[in-house]
Length: 288
Image (cartoon, rainbow, N blue to C red; front, top):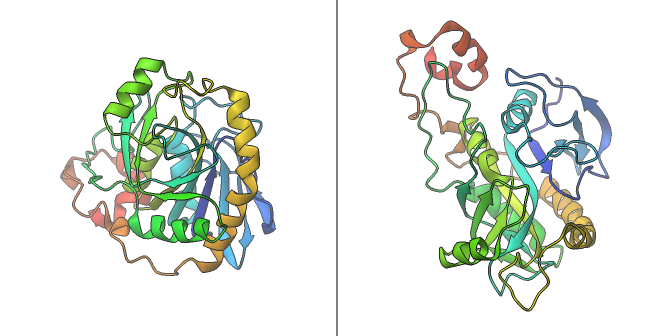
């Protein structure tokens, strides 16, 4: 499409649209992995072309395990998106990360079980490097944008992703705390790893909605509790995205754009034609 969006926003629980988008249009995208969660809304925000995708679909009808993560990331890649910001709800596993705070995490722990977590299969193998899974460049710019809103903000932290859709038991929550986890959610994995495979920068604006269930002086987390906090933070999230779009550096100087350069292990002559065609958007430049 003309004037492609380079910044993608994936809205999680509580954020299903992006007010302020000018000249917006819904784009129905088809991918080799099926349809994304919803039509992608493309428009201009603070002079920046932006693509917005509702992770759980319009009306929040997809559970964390049902979200078509591969389709979502591939769809944004097809549209030209280079940087992805995820806006997610999370529970706190630390006393100092209070409900209403925002966290820009720098590590992730994957405890999901039944999700397709790679584009690479059916005759094409890639071993992507994710020692530092979040893009530090994009995370730094996102941190500055959120900081400018005046929100209570934390830089860094380990984000554990559980399968869901249920919340944790108390022993699970305390175990995650003993492992050194900072926040807990249900959707960052495998989204973050797919973004790296697609050579896209990825950062999370995580909104703390509760103390999970480990905090015995607080009530156990409920849906009402999550939504109440998210509603209060929606304006902050939207303002931060506008500031990020306004100040986003045009060039990427991180390693994300070449993440696949040393990850592909299958000899080109051994790759099935159909697989090569399906993943051409990601790999063709390395197979010529």
